[in-house]
Amino acid sequence: MTKGQYPIINNGLGLLTPELWGRVMAMLRAFESKDVDERRAKSSTASASFFLAKLTDAKCVATNKYIYAWEEVIITAIYTFSSEGKTSEGDTDEWDFAAMNLLEGNNTGSNTATGVDESSPNFPDGYTYQAIGGGYATSGNTVGSLGVDPIVIMWKSKGNYVFTAANSYDGDCNEP
Image (tube, rainbow, N blue to C red; front, side, top):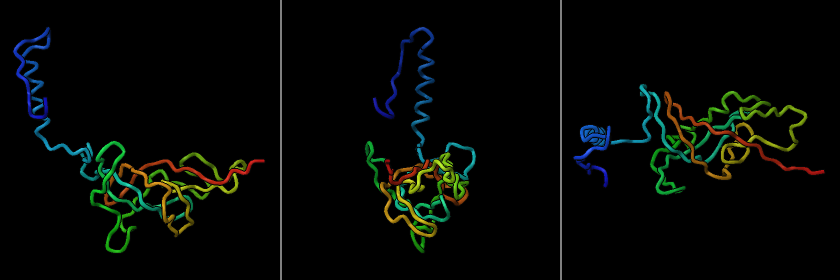
């Protein structure tokens, strides 16, 4: 049975009466008649909406804080994505509508949302806080090419594009 085909049930089974099945089919018919878009926020406020986005580059704006270039994608098959249209590019460049990772918002020069204290004597030399997708840049510079272009759930809230993802660290391990 496919969408729009609803059976008529003439015999019940205990509490599952034909009348109850009729009500269930009426609710299903009403639900399926709507144009459902999974990208719409399920909230009472119209100030936020979400979509899938592929991060394409990162720019360091302060120690342990990046902004991200992105493009909207849709799922076309399992682990297969296709560009959908919206991007972070505006009239100037790919950073006009850059997104920020909310987990980086309160990072400091030595403490990050991932729970790492970079000023600790136990923090290994040569390790750096990575942009989402991999790669490192100093303030004002871009990563240039992420290690992977991750897919995130992107939110637009009050004109800002935001997402949440935990950053990682990378560096060389000097074994004794």
